[in-house]
Image (cartoon, rainbow, N blue to C red):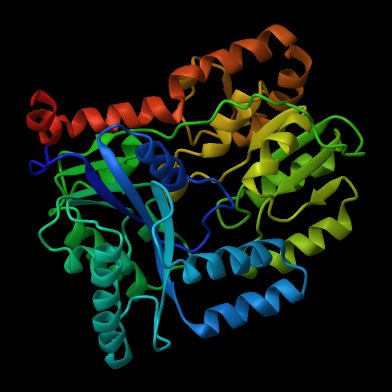
Length: 406
């Protein structure tokens, strides 16, 4: 696995597949920040998919209705859209899309959009003096394909984080289109990373030599908790609330009435009626809504235990949940269904089948000690994001070797 030789310092264009920058602190943002500090990197341009005025109008309506994620997205998107000049080593940017179109950038309107977006990308790259780019793409993503076409001679790195085609609610047509995105991008890449072995295995039809680089974590220095006045113990979950959640297991946890279950994260639109009904039935359920990454560590610090009550299916098995790393870095016991491998974390994560999950939560609460909390935090030191980037850059070492040797 290697990429074409590059002159250093290099410029890196990171392309994420959705518009949520700065809120959740996802892998792409942490990698972009780490890349911007690397001595061989001159500048990082972080791109999210282009937006149309209708997208902004939709965010404005949701923000007016009190949606905190929509408020953040509106502010962040407008900041990215207004950006016109490079500002420091890490520049975040979102393009305006001239005409409304489908997500897959196809059809007559999309053809016009593609031409205009490519022209603007080239102008933006020239304005930022990006002359020697490496494309760091997060497939499957039609916009990543467009960026790869625009800079057709640039070397490519693909960093895969989800088995997106395995999402249950996808239509067959969308599933096929996402597979096509993998097929177009992965063979071109000089290096391909995946967050988990199951994900790498699922991508083998498109690329065999995939390097597994799991997620990482920023070790929090300040563990001050938020003043949550809920009955103890507080059992917490932080992340998306959608089809990955085992709703039957959640109901069993609530019925056991062993403390307060705090679910912090955006609820998928199709699932909102169910969760609203559940919150009315159970007084020990708290749905906080989305929590920005800058407050997530303080929220996690209030948990007595962190839960990962995920269903077991190809989509959840392909994941490497960031929440596990963050909760362990905060010293919290983590109890998960068998969607992750405990040995990766030195046995510090409790894995429990559905029928034994409530008992496992009770045991984790009973056996927790300050000494175990320290062990969990120390165990996360090798998983820091700067260490992860070192692993990735080692795969790209042949590209930089000639310049380093001079």
